[in-house]
Image (cartoon, rainbow, N blue to C red; front, side):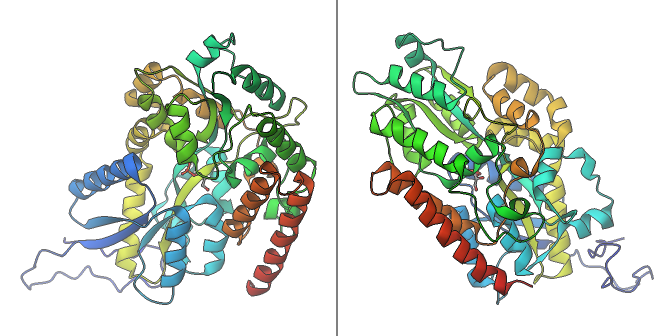
Length: 439
Ligand SMILES: O=P(O)(O)OC[C@H](O)CO
């Protein structure tokens, strides 16, 4: 028998038949080595290492080596730099906003090829997640770590301020009111990191598309709607709370807002569910953590959240064997058992529906009901172009421009409308330049 040839069955490059029995003594085949670049640090990195160790121990044919390559931004930049050489990985974790670039790069083998060859059942995946990652009805990468931003709040501070800890604010108006009531004794009602991701989600929450051309999904986007009513309403609300000192501006890093929240300096914060386990366990013995949905204006139309986190791409400049090895690892990561373990140990919600049947998840939800918020938020999200999420090849750069605009408005450097207008103009220029390079 020996190791099966690793090219997908349907591949046109599949080698000639290897069925003829060999009389030569067989040497144990070397395992295929798969280098996986990822961006999971701290506890998330430890969870990744455990998954890799489990996969490697589960079989002998493929050995994965996980390499932490810094933040999503840093890792993608390193990949761009390695694209003309073989020095890059076989598999890379790329945040959701890198999707369009990865497809346009022509550097990947779409996972759809392996899905088809293996008759892998995609219907086991969550629909909202597939909706995000399917482009032109094709799956280019396999979602792995999927998240939403949620509102985290300190129930003890709510009680002390005379607010009902079981009734968290859900609208912009309620958040502003609660933030004021919670701001006392040198503590602020809230702190939200200046994170472009939150602005993208505030758009989806209002059922508003972030880009023209169906959020960049019916045709390449040429403009952003950042400076439309949805953007202005959000930024004015945020700035109003910073101006009246009920919201503390701590800059761009969620690490800083998370620390302030865990230290009891702010009563509410926004963060990814990637931080769920860290926040809930980090507050144990100090205060009770509540979780709630992303706030939206009281008069918001149908909206919801866009799937965040990252997915896994197989690079096409590696051997068929390595690519197939990467696919085997991907399949391991998508199993209900793996996804259940990953959810419980991080807060990223499962990509597979069957993971919810695993006892591990049931026990965790009983112990930490906070894990239910993002699951409900995802399932209650109505599918439309706004919640399917924007796609553009220059998303990483555009996100930074959005962050600069928010920062300029919050610090009083520019009026919200001026800041959003300027960022919109720069994003349109970047889109025009990028679209010229893609055919
Ligand atoms: O921190 P994560 O992994 O939840 O990702 C958040 C965003 O989706 C990244 O673009």
